[in-house]
Image (cartoon, rainbow, N blue to C red; front, side):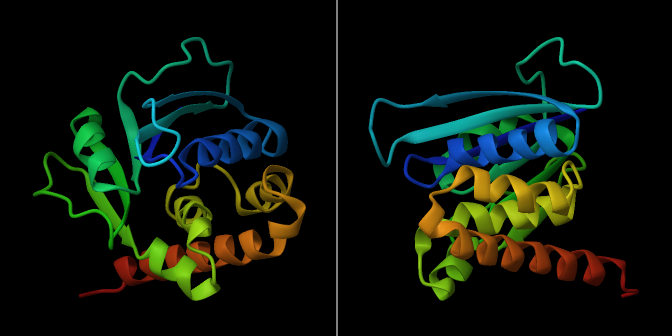
Length: 185
């Protein structure tokens, strides 16, 4: 079972990220998933998060007990939710927007310049999909194929191609990071 929290601020696609991964897991990977969300009263710019539980069997408790994965796209999201990350968790973060403190326990950090990559693709708004590609490569919670099917189901039709390019950019970067990790030092 994977307990995942996406954290950032309103307007970054944090809630949509949870929806896309949940859709990929439950519809295309034939797993079970639940998603809940929280956000401040602001329409954009306020803190928000989506919590996702993904399992091979029915999810009996739909809320996180201890996140095994934290995807942080803002400093405020990181600061608020990092203390709830499991001591053996994975931390995925946008390296231009989040400056992690010294790691505690056996948390494994993975950084990606998601917003920078999105800007290079022409739209900063797809940074969440860049980080979803990275998430897919690093965590293996959902398959590459399921995400490639879930993204077009979850974004406006005119933005499908851009979102798929963003996903590929993040996914390929994640594969590069994993390859470098395995190389002898």
